[in-house]
Length: 143
Image (cartoon, rainbow, N blue to C red; front, top):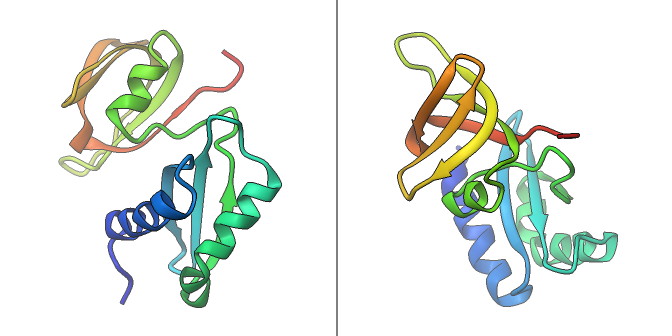
C-alpha cells in the first residue's frame, strides 16, 4: 500500500529541510504507483549536482520507488498560496478535482491569491477557486 501523496511530500520536505535547507519541494507526485516525480527549486537555481544530492538524501524513497528529481521548468507547478502570490500577473492553468462527475480547467491571468483561494481571469470570466478544489496547477510557458 502506498502512502498518500501529501504524506510522502511532507516526509520528503521534512528530510530535505535539514539536509538541504535552501531546497523548496514544489511538488512530489506518485506516477503509475511506481515512480515518485519530485520538482524542486532553489534560490540559486537547480543544477544537476543539486538534483544528485537530493537523490542521495532520499535513498529510502529510492528503495520503494523509481525517483525523478528535476527543476520546475517553464511550466512550473503551483501548489501553495505563496507560489500563486509569487506569480500574480502571469498566466496559469488550474485544473479542479472532479465534482459531480466533471472536472474543470481554467487558463488565464492570476489576479489574486489569498490563504484559501486563487482568483484567475479565465476566458469564461473571473473565477475564484478554493485550493482544496485544485487537482493540479502550473504556469503557462512562454507568456
